[in-house]
Image 1 (cartoon, rainbow, N blue to C red):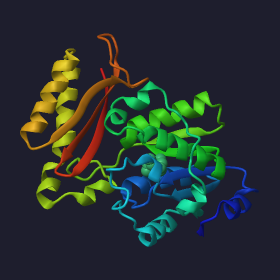
Image 2 (image 1 turned 135 degrees about the horizontal axis):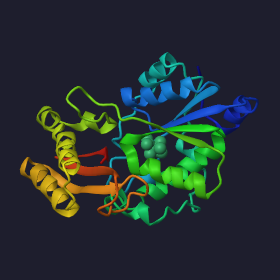
Image 3 (image 1 turned 90 degrees about the vertical axis):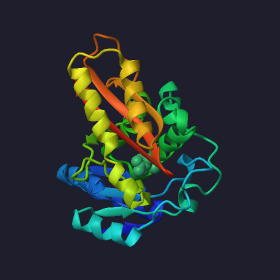
Length: 276
Ligand code: PAF
């Protein structure tokens, strides 16, 4: 496995590759990421992962500085997955001058996650487009854990005419159902024990939907109350259409429940697809 830090060296290395399959990450890899790597590997061609903590997608009060950086461990895991090339640029390589051109996401970018993390999807879309332009992949793999991110990247690729197939990887979970996330490392032992309630609450809501519940607002509010009653500070629990993440009507059948809530200082997100 080659580790490459500069755009020039990466272009030289990948220039002759017929099919590059790409997995962008911010490092601190967990088994969920490694599953995305295996999906990439299985597509054949040259498997490239990037490790870059993108300042542009962090709000000033967010955890950019304390975001866990575990590059050596990450590289060992990537090599074990059969990744061919790791692109690990520093900030000056990606942002040699202040980034004044941005990808402006559609209104969806200001809803759900975007309502609570203003500028987040603009930062994500901008760096993802930039990484796509640098790496030149035919295929790129994103996790469903960040469901809205996946949707926004798919929309960007479609509307900007990029010749990149976006492949979605399922969310990896701990045995107790907690979605794997780099931020789980911030949880205290007590918070870690409480954290699986987020997914359990979504599972409960799924049962209510499957049983015919259609008062989405009331069902969402009930879930938020359950979480709040157990010490969570809830940003949203939302039932949306899988197709565009907009609120469903009574006839919509392919839904996804999305949630974000904080336990202490740690903000967790999760989601669950429901077909009724
Ligand atoms: O999902 C992530 O880790 C990041 O948002 C991404 C896609 C690597 C862009 O920085």
